[in-house]
Image (cartoon, rainbow, N blue to C red; front, side, top):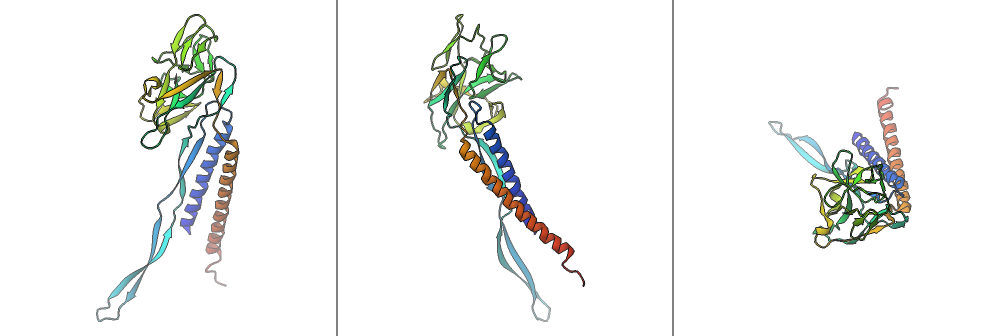
Length: 278
C-alpha cells in the first residue's frame, strides 16, 4: 500500500514539473530566439516481488523447508529526467530595425550521433563571462556599445565589445559590420557541434557545460550560416501542441490525484474500521 503512495506521488511531481516547463514555453512564445524545451520522462527501476513460506517437514530432527513463489514485478514510479531545448530554426520576423539581427542555419554538419550543430551570437554577461544566444534583439546603450535587450555586451570575433557612433550600421550575411562613422567589426558567431550539451541560464543565454568556449563558426568545417539584418528569429514554440500537452499533463496529474485519494481512504478504513471489536 505504501509503495502505491510513493508511485502515485512521483507521477504527480513529474506531471507538475512538465506543466511548469510547458507553461514557460507558452510564456515565451513571442520571445525572439527562444528555443522550446522538451521533457524526457524515465521510470524508476522495477522491483520483482516474491513470496516466501516455510514448511515443516515431519522428520525426527524437525527440519523446515523454505520455498518461494514469484508474485510479479512492481513499478516504483516515474520522474522527469531532464528538459532539453529544441534547436529547430524559428521563423523569421521582418522588423525593419537595423539593430535586429537573425541567424539562419544554412548548412550545419551532423555528428556521429545524428545531432545537428547550430550557431550562436557571442555575448558577455554582467560577470564578464562569455555566453551565447540566438536572440538578436540588439540595441545601443548610452555609450554606444551594441548590447542585447537585457544589457549584455555583444562581442566581435576577437571577443571585444562593439562600440558604434549610431544605430545606422550595416551587417552583411557573414556578420561583417560597418558603422556610419567608418567603424567595422566582425560579429562573434560561435558554433556548437552538439547544442544539446549547452546549459540554459535564462534571459536567452546559454553556456557550455564544461566551461570551454565555443569555436568560431567561420573556421568550423562544413558550417555555412547566414545573417539577416532587420529581422528577428522568432520563438520555435508550437502553441497549439503546447496547449494540448499541457492539458494532457493536467489530466495525468488529476488521475494520479484520484488514485492517491483512493489509497488514502483505504488507509483510513484500515486504521479506523479493520479489527474493530463490536
